[in-house]
Length: 157
Image (tube, rainbow, N blue to C red; front, side, top):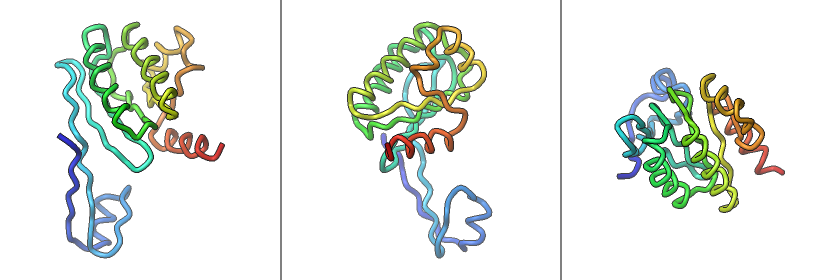
C-alpha cells in the first residue's frame, strides 16, 4: 500500500485555519495520507514520501524483538528512495542495543546511497544514544523542522 492523496475543495481561508502547516491557494486543498508500515505488534509506523526525502514515523518499542522487522521494512523504504530519510522516533517508548545497532546500520545504508539519516528523538532515545556515545555518528534532531533545515544545509554544502 502506498500513500494516498486526497483533494478537498473548500475556501482557502477555511483550509488555512484548519491546516496551518499546508499553504492553500485558491479552493483546492491537497492532503497526503501516510502509508502505514507493517512492523510488529510493539512497533508501528507510517511513511510519507516527499520530493527529496521521506519521513518515517515510528511509535512503540525498538528492541531485539522488533529489530528484524525494522531492518527489513525500513531497509526496503530506504532502498526505494528518496535516500534522504527523516526517522521520527519522538514517540518511541524504548530503545535497546539491538535498536541502536539497526539505527547505525540504517545510517550507513543511507550514506552508501549518497543520502542522509536524520533522527528525531525524545529525551529517552537521546539519553540512550548518548550513553553509548553514538550521538556524534547519528544525526539527532529535536523536530521535523530542525531535520529539514539540516537537510537544506547539507544540500548547500
